[in-house]
Image 1 (cartoon, rainbow, N blue to C red):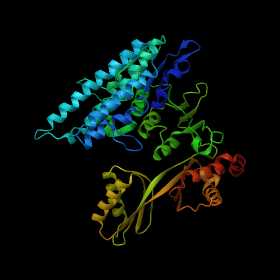
Image 2: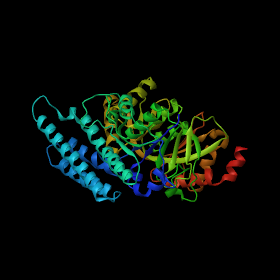
Image 3: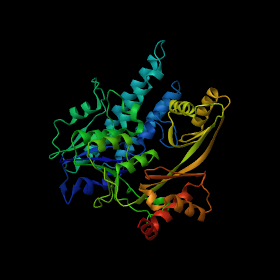
Image 4: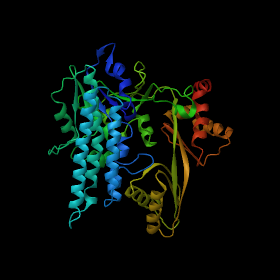
Length: 472
């Protein structure tokens, strides 16, 4: 294993001109020997699909919800203008700008024609737009990475590097390959010691990356590439360090870079919806024995945080994070077998595609803490009400905060967490810690996310002397 695979996130891509002489060139020398997997420029995938956080419709959602109006056409025009503005911000030579703009205009013209033809076809009996939407989503998702990879290649060539654009999107490619086969075919004649491959984060494949991994597709491509070439290391370049808490929340001077942790912690982070790495990508790297490094792209000399399959060391709290959740509670005294009730609830939640973060259960009540929108929770509650008309089903918005680390029992985390929250005037609804001691979960009332994280971080990470004393 000699080469490195690196992934650059969307926000970093939009500041590419700040990275040329640190990430790609160092002291005037091109830094070959690396494969780069790139995301779309910041905000572009939101415009192509839907906003990841707010849900505001993009091209895809406009087409899916209102195929008969001009919404998707207007959204496509808006996205085209945004893509052109994105490469104009990083490219300086007029020829490069013209080439990138022509690339966008050609792709968007073909996309508009494709969607219009599909809409016309589906106006005939026997053809249903909903049956084609998954393919449309795949096609639209790839546009952002096609554009960013092409623009980045122009940018690097202008700075004297032998850069090669590697398009895995399958645009106008009739072959239907598995993901690994598409990657192998696309990189088979690349010599990374002499050229710098710039690879699209989206890859067209038989299974459909979007269908299986949705917005985590670029990390899946990144991890499969690293496994295929048996990379020495996989590196994710972000605009911040992997820290003990959000620096914007607890203060940049108080948040601590983690430095070294395990894939186990990465799995716990993914369960909280954090964007360190998709759990499927982490599993691929762990199984291939490829270590992962998460670095701050704007601090190139800092080694960042290394993630590997390390053995448990000294007990430590490594991160405090949380999210807003809904507590979906089902109280059913008439169901003799609580396990059957649990299976029915799990199936119903799964049918709506919602993510369960945690759960509690007793003789006649099951509570799932779910990361979801209110409308989705209402739909699940309605379906469960139809299945169990005698059940009492309720949902309320709460906060789940997790203290992540290893051997937390040795640090008395639950007791110290309760004391810290009490000082802040907070009484938790629930405290959970499993036997493995990798996570302590605290359920708080809605609106207490930031106060709760600050209070717990101050006690468990900022007071190092106290933590060291208890660990000893």
